[in-house]
Length: 350
Ligand code: GDP
Image (tube, rainbow, N blue to C red):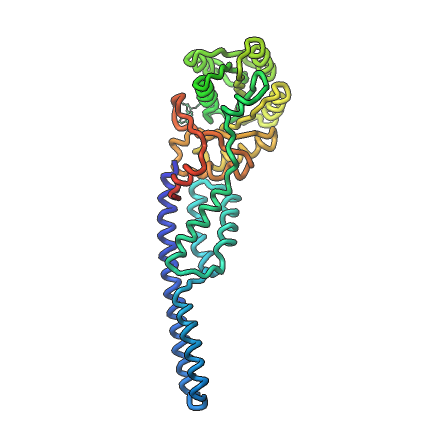
């Protein structure tokens, strides 16, 4: 993940160093010219000034020259110039506009009018950017611990997401993860709309040797979820994973259906599955599902083929909900726990 963005950020840090150098040179030259001019004026008036005053002036000049030599001031003009490049890099790499604006305001607060040694400017920018990025994420939920500590029997997780986002595969990955943690589970085939979706879920279930509770195509998905929960209760199965439909074209109906599933199944967790590579689309989908049904967390799939990574930077901030896992491949084991520090490292921040 982050192949493009990391390289772009690296060259941006270099270019900000170069810009600092250039800017410092311009300021230095200007100062030299002004000083030379002043010197000429002073020279003209020199005869009128006493020796004592002259000495004091020179001493003052010496100290201010010394100060100037070490300090570089981050002016509005310099900030705009440097940030413009970063803004472009972030937008090109799928970082949501709202997030870019937040980063800009954070950096401005931290950097504007700052006076530091010019050799330290690039490092200071990097530090401010790291702090700003860190603040974008919401604390992760420890899914396994949450289930183990819950008194609800069964623990119900409903998965939402648009068709093709990798929802079915992700449900199977979570089932695999639960098995590895000695937590029994069943699947509820709640996508009764899309042809072959039930069979697709059954294929995963048979590979993982778990049960699927299903109905006919066109049946009410909320009642499928209800049946699965009833079954899990009677068989003491710890977790129910509910699949849902993800069609886009009847958005109003879809959201009504989602609300009904939530009302009937009273899930412990509502997880939104989105495709990392679709960038702002994924971020916006997560936002509208969150507005409609209040999601608890996000799983970003196909992170293994997402070179840009802007969705993972934006989606938590936009929804206020944590990223739980990244899908990192097509195998059941390819589910990676979200870790903020690791993500920042991948972006080139140590
Ligand atoms: P659904 O329509 O949302 O249920 O999507 P599927 O689970 O059927 O996934 C669609 C395609 O994406 C399948 O070919 C999956 O193997 C693939 N896929 C799912 N998750 C990942 C992932 O994390 N990485 C990669 N590379 N492919 C994935």
